[in-house]
Image (tube, rainbow, N blue to C red; front, top):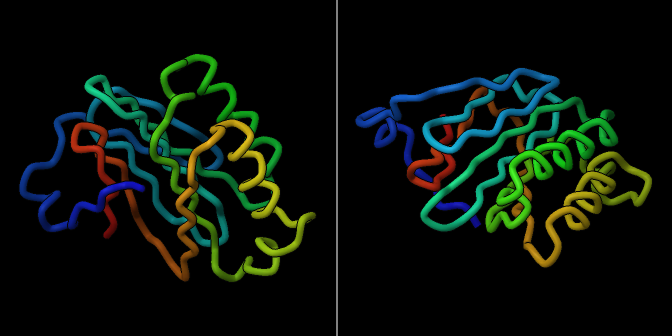
Length: 147
């Protein structure tokens, strides 16, 4: 599971490098902050490798774009091979899609199943949300930051 970093603590020493992921999209960095915003109805993954040379990624796609979302995560793991050995994977999904999480044909269920195939043997931290305007992965600290 990700460690959490309080937003006010984060603001006291923000990273020097900052990049934003917009829907549909993905970004992977070795240092700094990856952020995304406006999740309303979308799904998003935060991925962080472990060890001294951390690598972090965020994906952000519409809930119905499961296949595209999984293809992008696979592409990232092929380009950034140490991402494949991630120790922390968090999946953000809109609580309004709860039925989609419980139904084997549902978008969120399929996404979780696909993530478990990509990141074998890892526990995926699911974070259903009502509204998230902004969140980020501080790669240097190995933390999730929420506003």
